[in-house]
Length: 286
Image (cartoon, rainbow, N blue to C red; front, side, top):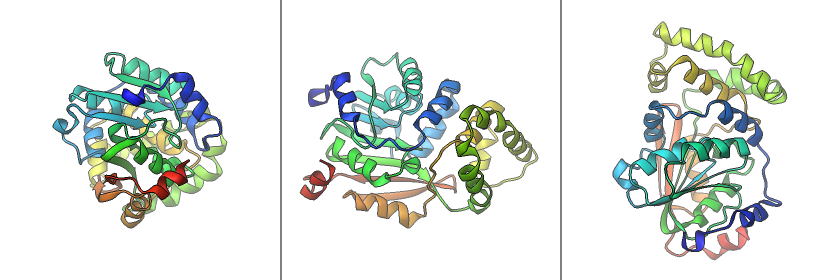
């Protein structure tokens, strides 16, 4: 990858001292248990990054920040991407990603932190799906993503929204903060069958007309449970308004910012890197 051919041991050295506070190990448990790419994951991917059609990935080089089990790197490669990097921290996530992406020799699966991506001016697209809102320093990760793309390259994220989420925030946030985040993750997974079963029943009875609920009705119970578990397990979860997401993108020096509502409950955002990166941002990241 030109200057992006970073040896694994160099990546590990750059991780020393990196801010890794969050739920890396807990998500590692999730992606070890739910490690199979499903056909319906493609529709989710397309919704999460609505700025890109399949043709927009052709011949592009990308980095997937917080790749989990690799499903969001899988689809760009099937659309004709030239090469990619799928990066995460937990070895269980990386093991699943290597297995799922093994058919694509042009994809590197590496252990690296979102706060210190070991490439500069390398990629056409840097994206992160469902990760930035779980970080202690979201802006720091976005700055790292921006520095990894070429001048004029694009940075895209999908994050939780606050719209239509009052009921969930009222019930889930306190339970997650004071109970679930303190329990062993295996216990949380065992408990998740109860709210998943309740949600399954509610959906089958026809309740919930938001786009997100209409999407959930298409999924198997196992897939639905994985989504419920994903909501229960993290130690950190930010839910943002449109203006907060836009301000976050702008604070990192991105331009031509777009923010689009996804499923009436979340946000996708995209911005471009300046042709010449502001010196202050480079200094701040070093």
